[in-house]
Image (cartoon, rainbow, N blue to C red; front, side, top):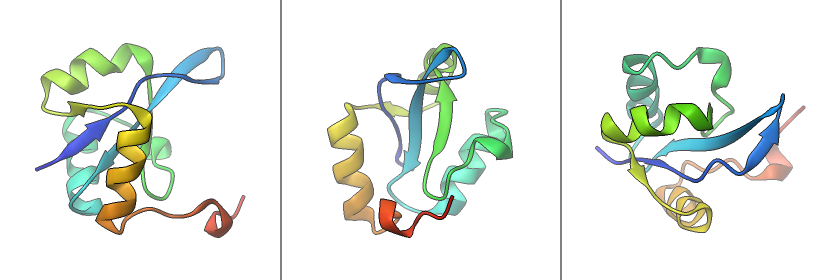
Length: 89
């Protein structure tokens, strides 16, 4: 299992947010998120948005803390990355 989490540097809704991804599969990512009480609405196609205060709990549960560039590099290498051009909003 390799679930990664980056630094909470993304501001939204009066908080800072981090990204949680899997290097292996979306099933692994969803399983980890479910086991750690992350709401389904936090999922954004290839990652979960998680608030800064959840970081210690998720790291304690086994998420590997990496920098944002490292997280992106490893997500792209996994084949799970959804490019911005393919995101419909």
